[in-house]
Amino acid sequence: MTYSVLTGQIMHETNTFSRLPTDLDAYRARYLYYGDEVAEKLDGTRTEMGGILASAENFGWNLIHPIAANATPSGKVTAGAWSELKGAIIGAAEGQIDGVYLALHGAMVTETTDDAEGELLAELRTLLGPNIPIIATLDLHANVTDRMAASANSLIAYRTYPHIDQFERAQQAAVLLKKAMDREIAPEALVVRGPMLTGANHGRTQSGPMVDLLAQAAEYEKEPGIHVVSIQAGFVPADIEQAGPTVVVTTDGELSRAREIADALYEKIWETRHVTTNVLLTPEEAVRIIAEAGPSDKPFVVADLSDNPGGGGYGDAPGLLRAMIDAGIENATFAMLTDPEAVAAGYAAGEGAEIDLALGGKVDPSLGAPVQTRGTVLRFWDGNFVCDGPMWKGAAQSMGRSMVFRVDGIDIIVTTNRAQVTDHQTFVSCGIDPNEKSVIAVKSAHHFRAAFEPISRAVLIVDSGALVSPDFSRRTYTKLRRPIWPLDMD
Ligand SMILES: [Zn+2]
Image 1 (cartoon, rainbow, N blue to C red):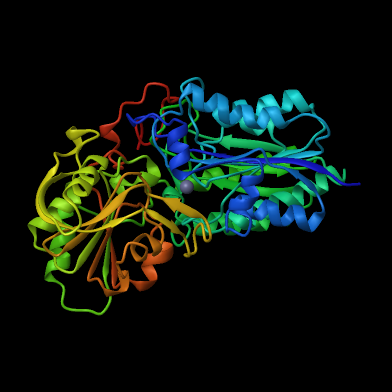
Image 2 (tube, protein in one colour):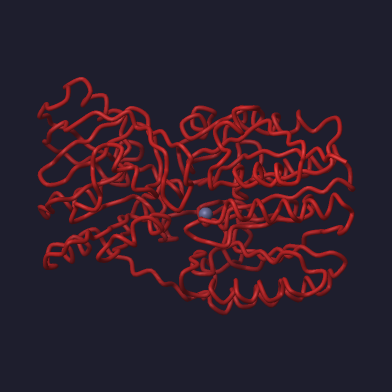
């Protein structure tokens, strides 16, 4: 028999401390595809939707895909946008549905709920009843709630950070879904969390505690009745009750063993809570290292993690750019400074024009005043490119109307839309060869490493004090469960 499988993607990592609401325009700026467009745009990409489309063809499923929506992390999703996104999935959950696979983030907060994924999964469960398997993949930085685990048969997070296994996780979910629809297994998900807001070295998988945690999880998955052991590092700038690291075990009839496994892994996350593999520099310290280094045919890659749009940063924090200009850094490029006002001024002046521009510091000037610059509008750029790196390969990105603005020795990519830098095409598509630069500055916490660490002489991580700075004292949590590490204990 041909199975009818409902699928779809609704992604958002919500930084509840951001003052930028996330509306449908924010989704359109990244992607918002409906119906046939979902397959047209995402088939063949290294994304979850690419993965489920390939699996569905392999298994001969009738795949129903009403929506695929993704927005760059920002503030709470508006009530209107959430109603539209959730409504697309719920509205398609009628007629013959044999199983559900959803690509979700797991840290989405809206104006109407602190637990968007839990609400969506619970409504689907109510509509479809207890016997239709529902499986979701999640970001490794999901804040998994009790309601999410209770409403889904399985939750499967990425196992890489940078997240380069989105395709594989969707395919893993598809295999599990097939077994559940064949009535070979009847999986259920169990979640364990403790008094921690952050942990597991923020989920980094190249070194630190996650290496051992993932290896141990893979061992547990060999046991009978233990189908998936998933570790989520959590998302810190989210003022909700159930934020923080979790372990989710998908089991078939081995609930007490599943709890032992989840508890054992959580205990390891607790024991390693002080381990961090990042050395954080101030912008001034980073540019001093660069200025004092000898020549090399490879670039320094310097990343401002505190203004990472991938964690909700505004992308317009001026601290690192100011330090680079002040230090006279040569043969450098800076990506991306999101400042639609500056882009408009550049377009009004025209290509080749030399103008004064106040760059950045517009969304929240308390995080740093604009940098006063004089430079040249080197070229206009339509902001469109297709990723060709390890992350999101094949997926399109649009930065909106953009330009390259040269200030002294620095080619600054100034954009209308916000996005984290993860791909060489960010530079190549606007005429900059990253391999030819001495310094590549990016706004990103970690994802940039997949594409840029291999071409770098060294990676420098900067905290310029912007919105997603790891400095907890900058944020006041009111909904988070207490007491919690590291706010209330050592
Ligand atoms: Zn993530």
